[in-house]
Length: 225
Image 1 (cartoon, one colour):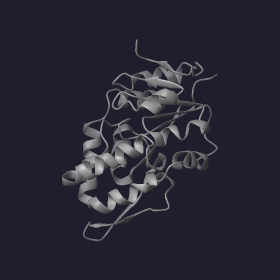
Image 2 (cartoon, one colour):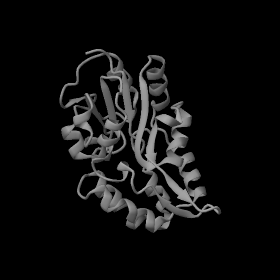
Image 3 (tube, one colour):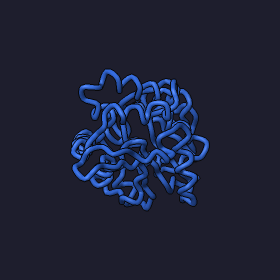
């Protein structure tokens, strides 16, 4: 294999060490966090919790700005170096996230990823900044959404690597050449069990070597000793 020519990153608990929706929840965390975790573990369909969480939280424009700043403050170690190194090597880098686009764009800006390569869920606000709804048609609000988005991006330069930590990322394993399960923030058992490669370190730096050295993925290979 040649080196990977496209690398797709999840955002929450992959590029940034937090779940944006859980931080948005504030006083509703006791309701929101279990819903998020159940969906990320694959215990319930994402579409069964996506609208429900937003209807409970009803985030404002200011809330999304706050979460965007928090994403950047909590970037996973190595995120900047990895994206910069991939970009220098001519690798096409995208962010593909079920998170809310205004907040995810803060991460993209911090990492130098162009807005057109950010695939996330749009949200609408009233003129005064109050929550007015979200893009309910986005594939990223339901299970199976990430492979659908990746397919719509074709033709991506191959081989393609996807780096993520949740069940929604694992869904896309059949449509990429290598799915890297990132367990450096949260280790989800099904993702760890089924990923081509698992990174257990609390840093994204191993991704640079995996993406550029051209080695074929070995099932259940781990970067941990």
